[in-house]
Image 1: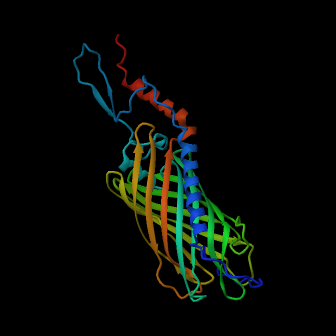
Image 2: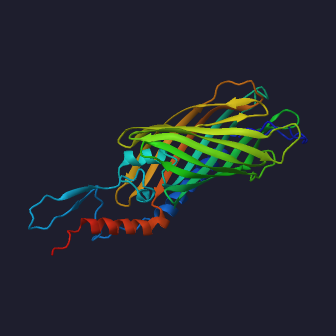
Image 3: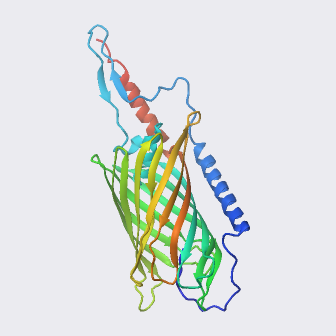
Length: 362
């Protein structure tokens, strides 16, 4: 995270390089523990499959009375793309699941874990090593309401060696809990593939280091995109007001995240989701180019899907004091069924069973 605010503090000794052995070990160990905890905690909500349970089918056939000799009538099943309650079950196809996970409006319970390595550059202390680690977890909690679903997506991060500029103009580094935020969106993907969502973003000044702490932030956000077949793309845009207000400053930012996912077969996907920001006070746009690849793996015995991937974000050169040059992101995303939708799933299974039974004979 970048913080260009000049703070009236006495000079302190220069911090050590963020890529030191201790910070590397702490970052890797924390990332592994964080991801393992999320995978175990959510995946155990998957109920065991009973031997007499009906197998999932894509077409329900209604049998006719044996005496009529008519052919069974095929009834297409819901694909799960548009009916909100149909996506409570985890798809068993890796390509379909990868496409759904790239769709922010898809109601899938996921536990995203990221480890970001960020390199900074700028005119302030050019000889200082300016790298940082960030561990981020971003679970997505879907709740069906009416024809669509609410998606609650908190973002929690811990920063190791995040750079900032002290009152003397020297680049320092700080380690601690970062500023958290909550995205609350409501919407769905329409039959034509159009993604439409709207909601609110809230920013919390949760950083444990005053040098990294932001102000309270609040504002609307909207998502527009397209998801159909093997292609998903779109953009999430938010407008944030920060409090407390200061004379002469708007303290307003336009933040956004563009995303895309292109399935290339066998669970592999070309995908990325870089963040860009426009600060209305500095009139500065920070817009990266993002490239990445991911792989969806489904363990058949326990039906525990896991997506692994890597992304690279490259930022153009800017005339600023301190800003990012590139970000290397490692990603692990365990996925689980939605426990609070089990009742809906049971009702759907009962309805499907009743439809497949032959009509009574008179």
